[in-house]
Image (cartoon, rainbow, N blue to C red; front, side, top):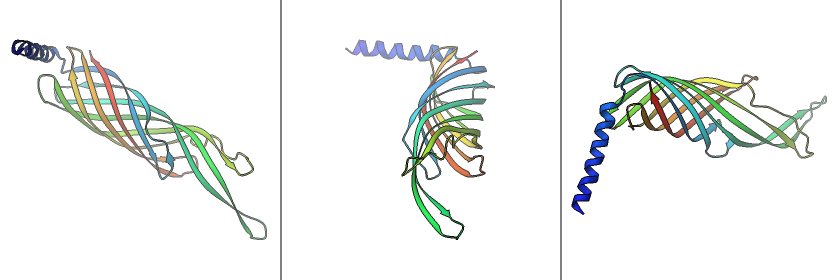
Length: 214
């Protein structure tokens, strides 16, 4: 039993050594990822996490510094909100009516950031990023009153804005070119729509990725 444990441990150490000895620490890399993303837009009521996927690419200048760009997409989120309409007639009398709004929306996020890496051992490393992001929210829906009339369609078209993003995660070298990534990304943006309304938006994502260094 002891010999079997020793053999397994030896194989693990040998594999780790080979992965480190052959891993590229410089050059262009390209990767894909999938995960779950949580969306928060102002005080609107939105369903919890939705599936997300993305691509990232960058250039590793040395073992600790890289520049990386990323695009990720998430959806479809279901958003609902109760509204109150106020109307004033020619005699200055006001009346109120209630309505219920529902939309299905998706998000697309572009980010660019420097990436800093710290090697933990022969295989594992940790990284962090801090940079800019550009987020776009799109979708369609309707506002339904008590008499089932629809007043608003495509409310979230052309809703976009700039903000910041940061990320942390782990890398695990598999061989000379391939590495596995486990990461957390956070982005905060002030979105603006066609009406000039500002909507503070927060995106948080957990993802698993695989990248290839050329």
